Length: 551
Image 1 (spheres, rainbow, N blue to C red):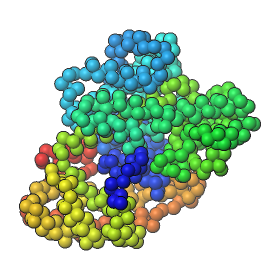
Image 2 (tube, rainbow, N blue to C red; image 1 turned 90 degrees about the vertical axis):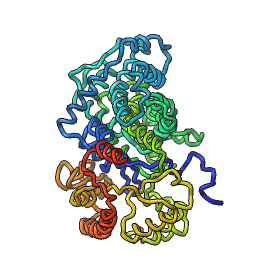
Image 3 (cartoon, one colour; image 1 turned 180 degrees about the horizontal axis):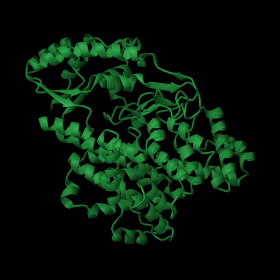
Image 4 (cartoon, rainbow, N blue to C red; image 1 turned 30 degrees about the vertical axis):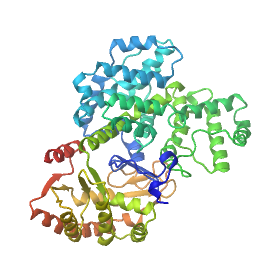
C-alpha cells in the first residue's frame, strides 16, 4: 500500500507545513530557533530578545529591544470593561477558560478594518497587542475568580516582571525574575505542537488572528498538551500527603501497576531522550527549595518519581516536569501554570499564523528539494535509499537524483497554481535541465531571488557549534560561548566535542563547492536578466517585503 494513502493516527511523521522559524533536531538533541539553540538563548538572552527574534527574524540591538519593550508596555493594560467582565465570570472558571474568554473579548476593541486585515503587517501589529495584553488577562482574570483585588501593570516594570507582579501581587527579587524569564523562554516556541497546528488550521480559513489564538487556548487546555505542568505538581502534592519521600517510590510503582499515566514524562518527538529544556531547568530547582516550607521534601519526591519512571519505563522528563515544580516554588498559583504556557508562546504563534495566511493568500507551492529528499528517505523509496547513502557519506546528493524528484513533481498536480523553488537549482546542469522540463510544459522561470550573506557568517554559525561531552549542553564558541572559556555553564565539564562535518575545514570545503557550483547558475540566470539580489542579513520582515514587492 502506498504510504501516502495510509491512515496515520495523530498525524505522526506527517509533514503538515514548512517553516524557517524553528526545528526540533532530535539527532543533535537541540531546539533551534531562527538558527540559534533555544538552550543558549534561554541561558544568555531574555524572553523579550527571543520574542523579537521570532517576530522580526533577528536578535534585537539594545535600541530595538528598548523600543520593543516600550511598545509592549504601552499595550499591556486592558479596557476597564474587561475588568468588569472578569467580575461577572463564575468563580469556578478555570484560568485557561478565563484566558480564552478574555482574548475573545478584547478582539471587540480592535479597529474593525484592522481586525479583518490579514496582511503580514496588520497581523504583526495585532500580534504584539495580544502578546502584551495576554499576561494582564491571565493574572487579573485569576484574581477576579479568587476574589482578590486587581493588580494593573506598572509602566516602570519590564514585561516579565509585570507578569510576575500581577500574578503575585508584589514585586519580586532578581532570582525569581530571571528563573521565570527562563521558563517563559523555554516555552516560547516548539515547532508544530497541537495548539500551533490548531491556530494554523483556523488561520487558513482567513479568520482573524484573535480567533486563531483563542482556538490555540482551547487546544492547550487539554492535559495531554499544556495541562501537564499542573498535573505534575498535583501528583507531587498527592505523594507528599500520602507519606512523602519515604513512601514515594512505592506509591509511584502502584500508579504504574494500575496503569495510571505519570504526567511530565516522555514526548512524541524526544521519545526516550531527555527534553533539552527539562535538562537545563532541573538544575535551577535546588536553589529554590528553601522558598517553600515543603520545598526540600517536594524536591526529593521529584527526584524519586524521575528515577522510578526512568527505571521502569525508560522515559525522561519533558519540560513540564521541572517547570511545574519551579513555578510552584516561586509561589505562582497552580491554576495559572498552563495560561503562562500560552502567554509565553504567543510570540511564536503569531508569526506562524502570519506564515499560514501568506501561503494561503498566494496559493502557490513552496518546493524545497531538502524537504523532498527527507520525504523520499522517510518513505524508503528507491530515490530515498540512494539519497540516504550519499548523505550518510557526507556528500552532496547527485544531480540525477534531484532531477528525478523534480520530474516526478512536475507529473503531479502540486504546481498547478505556480511554485517557488527554495535553494534550487544549485548547479548549472540542474538549471539547464529545469529549463528543458519547463519548456515541455510551456512554462518558464519568472524571477531568481539571490539572498546574499557573507560566507564567514555561515562558517561561524556552523563551525562554532560545540557540545559538552558530559551533559550535552550546546554552545557556539563565536556567537554563544560558555560564560567561562572552555567550562560548561551547566555541569562545569571541560571536554567539548564537535560533529565531524561541523569542523571549519569541512564547512569551508562544502561552501567552496557550493560557491563553485552556484556561480555558474547565477551567471546563467543573469544572462537572462532574471536575478534579483537581496541582502539576507536584514530582519526577516524586511526581506519578505522586498521579495513580495518583486511579485
